Amino acid sequence: MPAPSIRRLTVAQAVVEYLVAQQVERDGQAGPFFGGIFGIFGHGNVAGLGEALEARQDRLRYYQARNEQAMVHLAAAYAKAQRRLRALVCTTSIGPGATNMVTGAAMATVNRLPVLLLPGDLFATRRVAPVLQQLERPESEDVSANDAFKPVSRYWDRINRPEQLLSALPAAMRVLTSPAETGAVTIALPQDVQAEAFDFPVDFFETRVHVVPRPRPDAALVARAASWLAASRRPLVVAGGGVLYSDATEALDRLATRFGLPVAETQAGKGSLAWDHPWNTGPVGSNGGLAANRLAREADLVLVVGTRLSDFTTASWTAWQAPGVRFVALNVAEFDAAKAGALPLLADARAGLDELGAALEAIGWSGTEGGYRAEVASLRAQWNAEVARVRDLGHQPLPSQGEVIGAVNDAAGPDGVVVCAAGGLPGDLLKLWRTPRPGGYHLEYGYSTMGYEIAGGLGVKLAQPERDVYVMVGDGSYLMLSAELATAVQEGLKITVVLVDNHGFQCIDDLARSKGEDNPFNRFRMRDPASGALSGAPLPIDYAANAASLGAHVLRADGVAGLRGALEQARGVPGPVVIVCEVDGSVGVPGYESWWDVPVAEVSASPAVEAARAAYETDVRRERRFR
Ligand SMILES: Cc1ncc(C[n+]2csc(CCOP(=O)(O)OP(=O)(O)O)c2C)c(N)n1
Ligand SMILES: [Mg+2]
Image 1 (cartoon, rainbow, N blue to C red):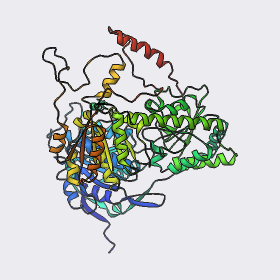
Image 2: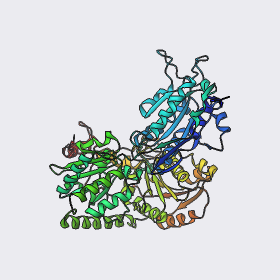
Image 3: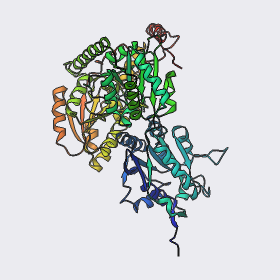
Image 4: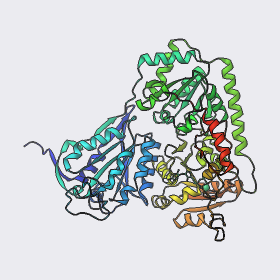
């Protein structure tokens, strides 16, 4: 008798059995790809996936979440901290539970982070319709709320028959483990199909190792890139997130050091070189610093590595002003390598940097000239002095946000990780945070989603329990999505949340004012009964009491000295800590010869808006297209 070659499982059981058998290997090291599953049950997953997971708690641990959007943030942060070599799964009920994940899916896809989303779906049999939470469409029965995931997923499928899993799950794994294509993967699971049994082939559940390759660039193009570099007088490297994902930090260090190449950082790439590395010139772009922004302006050759070249990196395409400036784009994704009319080096960042270094050796280039090196050193010194100044303003009576960042950075030490996503903090962190080690700076600035911060911090802590995680969150973001503090308490995940209270959506208020607006739309003020405007007393929100009510250990920081004391105290607390710190929102960190394109009203009754429009029309002329 031949061994039975089928296993009779429900579709939900088959999904779980398949997921636990998936491994990923890079550079010869293999491990399980899925680190667990977050979920909130309801109809659409409780009797299907819920039953299947109960039986497999030994291999795929289930974690409760409070909010479906937050759990996708958590999963994406986990994947980022794992350099995309591990991921989490998210399961939801149908309807609102499912569509709550759409924002998270978009965020993961924008940031190229793998997350596997398993929303429940309507009955495939359509036996009962409309079911609770069904979005009916008169023109078609082949549509559900889950179709909203299509434009925000890199792979989307709906399992209407059990055997569809046999192609859908491998396709999902291909996308999740692809450095070039990864993002949100959505597999909608109709709830009747989840519970249906099927004779699956046994070998479908055998351990499968997905090898993440390090594609090498085209040899002729590497030679050309090397000749362009050797001919340049003012080259600049821009390090994006791809450097970190590819573990290319040492390769970048070697190339920069050997040839005297200044390196500028993006939000996703910050930490590619230690902040005090002799060739790290700091951030570039709209929130860039004076060293990198000046170097960028006059650069004649820009080597961009692992970056999407978002408007914040390119300062809305005003960053590069030298006539004839050329780009070389090293990227694992063809889509990104083709940007800026660049010479495309379609490759893994580490492999590409190594090959470029070898090609430069082969043509005997000794690197940049002494004059340029001296200029870089001088700009670096000026920039580091400016950062020190802003981190230590001594503003009274309330501290500035820059001082708070300095204090948290000091407390985080060499191995701490800072997590942030939206508000005024990301720009200030990009300028002021000093990252000693790769992975110490974790910003979600692709989608810049308010509410990512606390959930993201938990994802990082789950991925890297040995590192201290510091979440910096604005009062606005905190109000939007902070309930995962309860999850932190439940799971004993220690994160230190520094809640920066400036009584409103301060960065938007600043932006509105810089464009001539004069309204209270972005401040947290009571509506004034007399005027009817949002200009009354500050909202009486007690953030400390709010966080304490969720079970967090809470500390109130009074000034910078109080904050330093609270951070010290937080060290000894085993569970999550929230430190509430009021700042003076009117004291911002300056911009450094940079710009961001935010169009201003072309006609307005307000002279301030008219003036802002006139300035806009001058500035926008500096935008250069590179196609
Ligand atoms: C989900 C979401 N909604 C809206 C925005 C637009 N937005 C960006 S920053 C911001 C204000 C953030 O306020 P807060 O967290 O207090 O930070 P602050 O600006 O005060 O530093 C808003 C509304 C966003 N990024 N994400
Ligand atoms: Mg605020």
